[in-house]
Length: 134
Image 1 (tube, one colour):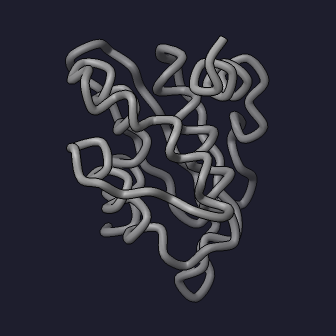
Image 2 (image 1 turned 60 degrees about the horizontal axis):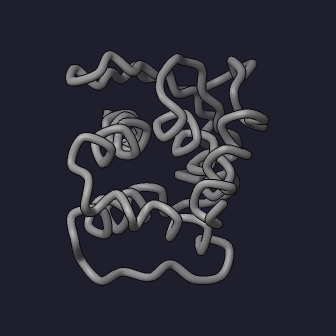
C-alpha cells in the first residue's frame, strides 16, 4: 500500500479530531453537492489563533481524512487561511510542496489528476475558509 493510501486510511479509520468541540467559538457546515459528503467544523479561535478545531460529518475516506489531517495541522496556528489557499492551489496543479509539520498535506497531490476526488479533499478546506471569513 502506498504512503498516500496508508496515511489517508489511518486518518479515516482512526480520526483524532472527529467530535463536536465543546465551547467552540465558531461553527460552519459544508457540503459537497456532487457526492453528498457533509461536514461541520468547530473552532475555538482566540486573537486569530485556532486554539482548537474539530469536525463531524459523513463522507468518503478522502473527505473525512482531509478533515482530520486539516484539524491536525491547523491546531494552534494563526495562518489557516494561507494554508487553505496553498492547499487549494496545490490541488489545482500549482507546484507547492509543504514542509515540516505541514508535509502530511502532500499526500493529496495525487488528487490533481482526479477532479471528482479533488472536490472531496477540498470540502473541509472550503468550509474552513468560509468559517474564517465569516
